[in-house]
Amino acid sequence: MSLEPKDDHDHKGWLQQKDLSPVEKGYLSTLMWIDKRFRIVDYMELLENLYYKINLQMPKSHTEQYNLDNKFWYWYPLYSLGFFSLLAYIVAAFSGALLGFYYVPGAAGGATGDPSAAYQQITFIMTDLNFGYMLRSIHRWSAQVMTAAVFLHMLRVYFTGAYKEPRELNWLLGIVLISLTLVFGYSGYLLTFDQLAFWASQIGVEMALSIPLLGEWAAQLVFGGFTPSAATIQRMYLMHVFLLPFIVTALIAIHIGIVWMQGIAEPH
Image 1 (tube, rainbow, N blue to C red):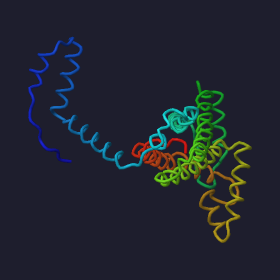
Image 2 (image 1 turned 60 degrees about the vertical axis):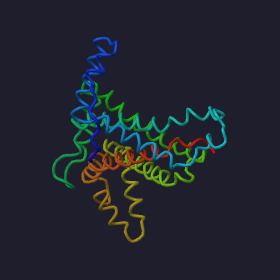
Image 3 (image 1 turned 90 degrees about the horizontal axis):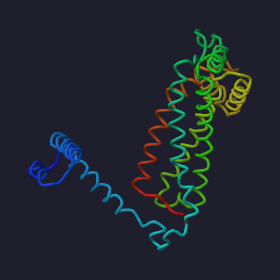
């Protein structure tokens, strides 16, 4: 990106004219030193102009159009559900990364390995690892809070009419995100390989087999066979740790970027 060169200013002379404390002088001198080398102010002005150009092109919000002021103040707490979902996702991602240091998806040997190794490792984390019970509980509860917050966030968007023009694309993106959130929760639910996880994975296999024509192929691809095994744990682990985080993080960034460009939609 090329920017037009601007006239040099006598920053030192300007700084000497001001009655500033040593801390303020040091702070401003540091900013000037950085700006002279990296032209931060120029790029900030560029982003500011871009922000105003984007927002000037958007239609007026419902509150601005009808001069409603703060008539819908009782809705405002519900407008924090999106941020609450993001916060829960960050906590789940951080705690999950720490759990990854100790969790083993299964014994070596692929589909013929021992899937009970995953359960044994969860038992170790919960009983023998220092703060392991707390760490897994934080990860589990943050995932559940995220699922509930995303669901309530979608309800708020629907009942306040925030899915209408010109926000249809972000509504569709939100549907994709809540679907991936459920897949996130399901894949993590199976990684413990306890009784609940075993039968939940068996239900998933049966659902995959019920797909017309492609049922057996889908069960083999997603679950590694027709009964839960070490291959099932490995596939869920790869999906939960190496695939979904990157996809969901990218979609969340796009989702937030669209909200930033379009602004918050007040109740219709």
